[in-house]
Amino acid sequence: MPYLIYAIDFDGKDVIRESLREAHRTHLRSAGNRLLASGALLAEDRKTVIGGISLFDTEIREEAERFAATDPFAMAGIRRETHISYWRKRWWDGEFKKD
Image 1 (cartoon, rainbow, N blue to C red):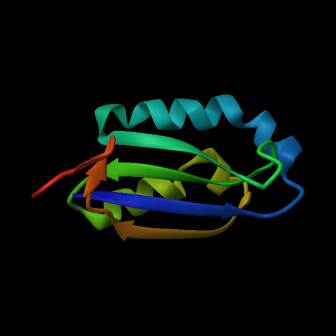
Image 2 (spheres, helix red, strand yellow):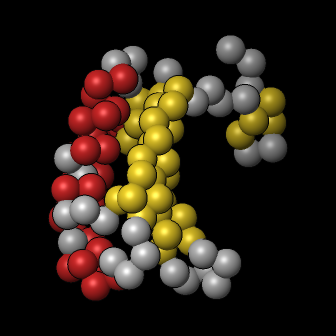
Image 3 (cartoon, rainbow, N blue to C red):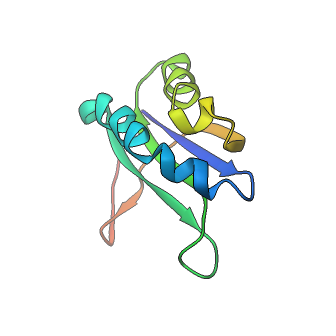
């Protein structure tokens, strides 16, 4: 069952975030097909990055925690808080998905 990794960033980290963007993307790629989805959380202006969400497929919580903690954004102190929870797909592309 995948884990949802929900991260909120500190304000004012745009310059350092941009300098680490390629390292962050390399980290995401390193997960291969275990990374089901990932993307930025945006402010109401639809431009300002305020965090990110990833769906990481593993049965072992510690693997999801390690993936989040070793993200270059986290290691550089950009993340203000990170929440990790099981995620169960129920609706996808407008359809109900039964277990």
